Image 1 (cartoon, protein in one colour):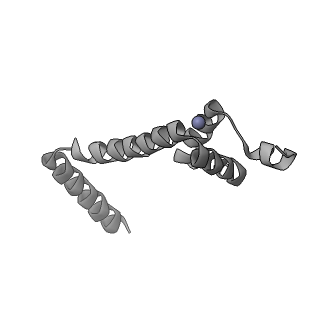
Image 2: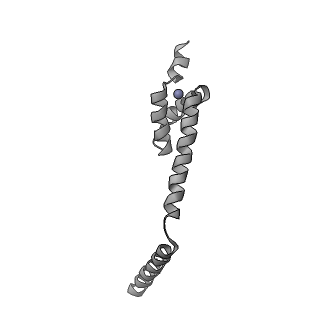
Length: 90
Ligand SMILES: [Zn+2]
């Protein structure tokens, strides 16, 4: 294995770290590239990464869904009120 190729080969724990970082947009381009390389050769991490992105998606979705309609309505009223107050002050 040449040095250049070896440079791109990372172990599963490092891949998991990059995977977590990339979910929060914290991974560098190099880390993302290394992660992609690892995902291309490692079935296990590919599964984990797919699961992770699904999970993040679900969390985002559930956050919206757990908010009941009456709460949303209340927020809308409050936002409206605030806008009205802003306007009356100026
Ligand atoms: Zn792996």
